[in-house]
Amino acid sequence: MIAALLLSMAIAATPLDPAQEARAQALDMEIRCVQCQNEPIAQSTADIAGDMRTLVRERIAAGDSDAEIRAFFRERYGDFVLFRPPFDQRTWLLWMAPFVLLACGFVAVMAVRRSGAAAGAGLEPEESER
Image 1 (cartoon, rainbow, N blue to C red):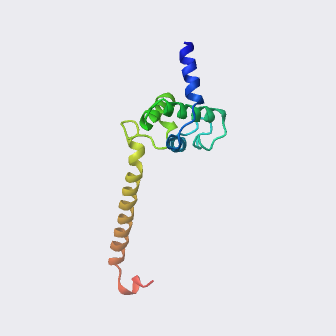
Image 2 (image 1 turned 90 degrees about the horizontal axis):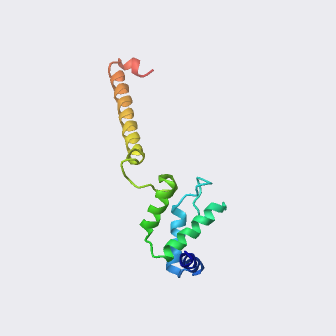
Image 3 (image 1 turned 45 degrees about the horizontal axis):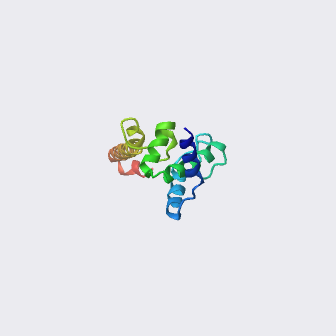
């Protein structure tokens, strides 16, 4: 137990090299603060965001990949913690909704144009000028 505590303290105290720090900063922008809810942990001043930033750096120093770090936070806090949630059974509607709404809008515009063209086609020349 003491060895694990010393190991975690050594990992936390070890500064990251520039490439690892760049990875950490990129991940900090992808992970949402669970207290602020609309800010990435990189921009949040909440205490928990600071803890989350530290945890990202510890996991990078331990050798975790970006996908493993995202999976860790997703497992711990849910899909909401990621600004770009993964495409799976629970989130397919979230990802497909913009396309469905765009298709509905296109169908509605075409229906209005057709009804307008059909209404204008039955008028006499004098009536259509009004």
